[in-house]
Length: 122
Image (cartoon, rainbow, N blue to C red; front, side, top):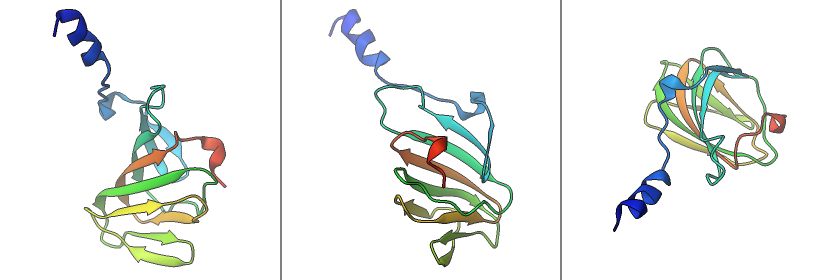
């Protein structure tokens, strides 16, 4: 492979350091969103810190996958009419239409498909 091809291949990937992303308010607490500006990537990756009970909501088109990095001792998720205890290392996939909210303090890696749209919070 020549040097030109190596550069083309190398430029195809993206690296994000969450510490360099802006911290934005969200209904759950704060979030940092990665890859929203990458046209070829079909979703977004969020590092979300839930500092208090989040607002119950749902999405009409977004699927969210929460991977719990850190959880307080009484952390849980409300998923429709059920409350499920969660802990670090667990993962929950939330399809469109499922009402949900985080309860308690936690840090979540949230993988969202398609790209996050703040207008899709109901």
